[in-house]
Amino acid sequence: MDIGGGEKFDVIVVGAGNAATCAALSARESGARVLMVEVAPEDARGGNSCFTGGAFRVVYHGSADLARLIPDMNETELRDVDFGTYTEEEYFDDMGRLTQYRCDPDLTEILIRRSFETALWMRENGVRFQLGLGRQAFRVDGKFKFWGGLACHIWGGGKELMKALHARAAKDGIRVLYETPAIGLLQGDSGVEGVRVRYQGHICDLRAKAVILACGGFEANAEMRARYLGPNWDLAKVRGSRFNTGQGLKMALDLGAAVAGHWSGAHAVAWDLNAPPFGDLDVGDRFQKHNYPFGIVVNARGERFLDEGLDFHSYTYAKYGGEILNQPGMFAWQIFDQKVVHLLREEYRIPRITKEKAESFEALAARLEGVDACRFLETVRVFNAAPRPDVPFNPNIRDGLATSGLAIDKTNWAQRLDAPPYEAYAVTTGITFTFGGLKITNDAQVEDTTGHPIAGIYAAGEIIGGLYYHNYASGTGLMAGAVFGRIAGRNAAAFATGP
Ligand SMILES: Cc1cc2nc3c(=O)[nH]c(=O)nc-3n(C[C@H](O)[C@H](O)[C@H](O)COP(=O)(O)OP(=O)(O)OC[C@H]3O[C@@H](n4cnc5c(N)ncnc54)[C@H](O)[C@@H]3O)c2cc1C
Image 1 (cartoon, protein in one colour):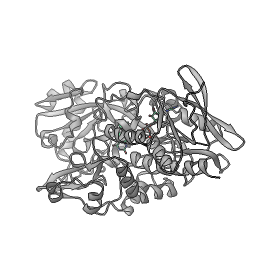
Image 2 (cartoon, rainbow, N blue to C red):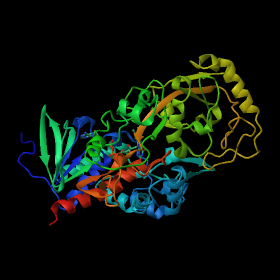
Image 3 (cartoon, protein in one colour):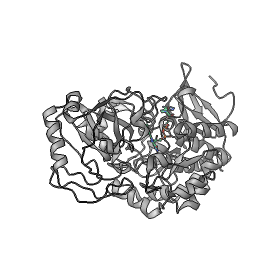
Image 4 (cartoon, rainbow, N blue to C red):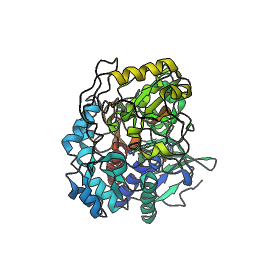
């Protein structure tokens, strides 16, 4: 069956999310004829990328750099915002510290050093950026101040990102076959020579000189989650696409590809207890509940089980989600008082939310389903009674307002909970993506288990391993997908169209 309309393609890209479209655009720009194959129907295209809020971790040296990415910044923004900087050194520090210094040094360097130029390239390709004011900066003494290295966001989040990149791909004549899962790689004497797909009930072989795998991790595959991440991970909710089932990884492993990264690790966050099993594009990322640093979190025993104020949420949220899985019943409640409610992000005000509110802790305790009420009241009493230094609460810095003497102290933002009514939000583990992936060279070419690159096959996005271990710095997923997608596209095109 001819499904390419008789056309010949140099490069086939598997997937149609951020990494895939960046790869396709880059290959096209380098002169290759490109086809994309995507398992999802067109209205669900864009994978996890479509679900994102658009946090984008890019190196910048102050407002001038940001103005190159966001030329439409207005006067008020320029006047009222302390942009700070996010230098290469800070980026390296964050990636090293969060991954316990396991992240691949070469890939990390490429990610960081190419972040700004890649963001500019995305802009040239129609992606718009905005300041992350509501999410990554609070107004203190009349000025917003950015923290966590995330001044830059994609305008309109993942939906607009995917709209922009696909509009550009269509303009560049890149064809996408939807509802066309890749199910295998075609291998010949010279390496990978195409992809086997399922198309309208038929198995078809699509030939091309190079293939780019950008089809996500195995987060939406409960069986693989249990196998690689461990007990109970099969029960986690999936924050995004139902289509990232690890098929691309399996195809590459069957071919002898080498693995890299943390195969028993994953990015997972606090996610509404009653969210659906997979992401809902109408809600996007707003089932997440990221403001726990301003309150306390208790489990079914009514006990705190983590240091809510260890760091800005951008540096703890991706590992704390997995901690909920280890609690009895796999749920937790985040508790806040009125002093901080104005700081809670928009995601705490959506209609589909599991929330309780009460004038006293006694009344609240009775409403926290599944929680030992007596122990909860004792936890609040002990937390409030713990000594802390006389320093002002400041959400824009690690303020050092820490408890002391508790079994688990709260390191920052540890105000007493004493301003009713009190609010509580029920959360469970929502998995975002898996950390284990394929080993690639600095040219984004997939390596085999003997340490040699496999001819004709490249990879980018969640499917690559080596950048994340144990934890994750928010906003690097989209950035890494774009950086390595662009590299993969360029190199696949050169290989496919070269002599
Ligand atoms: C709710 C949520 C919020 C997030 N927020 C942010 C954020 O603000 N900033 C950030 O940087 N990151 C964020 N992330 C992480 C980010 O989404 C990912 O790191 C990134 O989008 C991965 O891009 P990708 O192109 O590798 O994968 P995806 O965008 O998931 O694309 C993979 C594509 O491959 C397709 N596919 C899978 N298998 C096959 C197959 N066999 N054949 C054909 N096609 C296939 C899928 O349908 C999908 O379209 C968030 C993720 C979620 C779920």
